[in-house]
Length: 217
Image 1 (cartoon, helix red, strand yellow):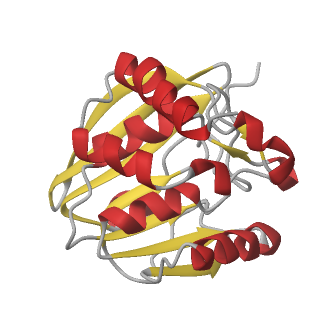
Image 2 (cartoon, one colour):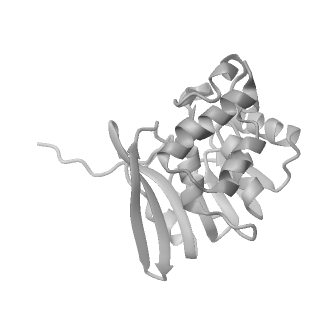
């Protein structure tokens, strides 16, 4: 398999046709080798339009969802990022290339260790990996300019909103299968947030997520 040819096909056929048009982001996706972050047995699926299984029931989001998320968040070089769900470490690596610093929280010690090894192998040093359950929020570092949540949530806990800076952006996939909404939240005031639904998709939930209230007859 010609890796570079397949990578370029992904960019042209999946990402550009799905409105990922930021040239800086597309160049970053060329530079950070996605194939190094997928499980070795699934390396040939690195550029396929699918969620790639990881250990413990987790997944890597498919490439176009990752790219749309990063494009929407528009991370700046002087910003600090909270990532909820380190997973394979691939999105962590991309965020680290864009931001000043990334705090990445993973509930699975096994996945966290693997992500750390892969980030170290690629010389990425501006990431703080933390083991813990951030499904309800993660205010350890106070306020964040960017928040990227890489598993779905039935509802978005208030704690995430409160930990955003003014002007901060948050990406989350919200709802229940089979229809979930990829949503960009922007904090525009002390008590004011805007929400934009970007597209519909489906993604496994974070562990221990807050459930929406259900009506029972």
